[in-house]
Length: 432
Image (cartoon, rainbow, N blue to C red; front, side, top):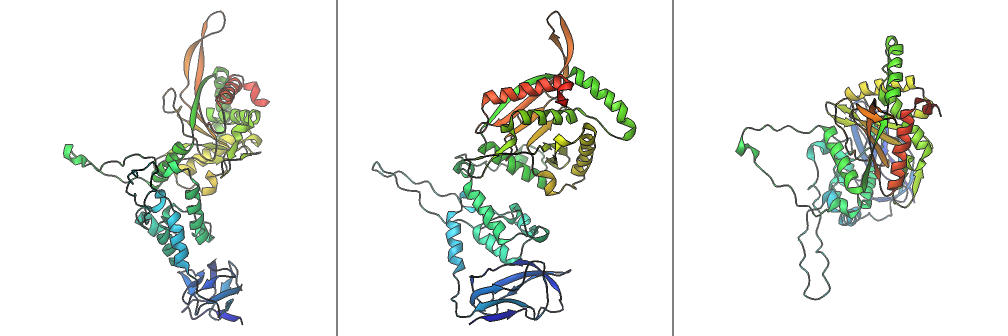
């Protein structure tokens, strides 16, 4: 026989919004288990179950406004209480070292030919949790408890709930992604860095890394150990292109539009992606299928005082050089003022990292997963080039293309940079 569960006395709050539903039909719940999360202008809270039972039907939806006496759900009071802790322990046993495990002691080989399996160890729920970022994460008390039981640092979890709130599924998906990573990601067999007191040799100063520095470091480390990188170096004669660019700079100066070489590079890269579509693809989560993209979005690595960010310019193939130049100026300002949204840095086909304004000759950029290639650009310089009769001064741009060798082989890497060089050397090819 079903029993209706209503919103109890929640104090002075009325018409509070349902921001998260914590149970589903068929769930077995205990008394005091949280049923839904609600939020007012002043606070967020969870509404508990008055008794145990099996959830029959949910009577509210996300975004609904509820008050004391509103019908929440119906339950079958005869259901047995669920054993959630046991399920949590099962999940914890599967979580690898990279989430919350303490290093297990090495197991000596057995005297016989067969070796014994490593001794099981119980993960430490908080051994890898950054308490500061955990405390700042936008999550309910139930989710915080659940995350601690699994040893998940909520500061690393992206929330998909309303206003970026972290849900139970977000925590579960974080664990699943971690478990799907190659074994080498969590245990490279590298000895930990020793703790050193550097002040013994002189005066020192300690400064914490910015949040962007920390996140960038984590992503780059993951990309470096996961992707088999190869870098193809090449050069492009941009003498004629630079002359054309300078004429455009003068023409659009009064309109406040800055025409940089990066604008032409983006257009040229799109031409290369169309010619070689394998560069505009991504491996799926299983690593067994290749997803080809029909859009052409180019990420641009932007150096900010707080670290590196990569905003993405959408649909570069559909925009003019002037439109791209205007958008580049806008996203660069947003990046340096910390106004980029997560959506501004997603959906890229390929990334361009340009160090031409700083210097250098060549470098090996790290692939920005889930993309399969990244183009590095260094400072151009005048060089003597043999034209068949004599040497003549030409402006040469160094190119460094890093790619995922699981998807792209060396021959295609060379074809890509050769095609790109040819396009940049003849501005007319940008029209093709």
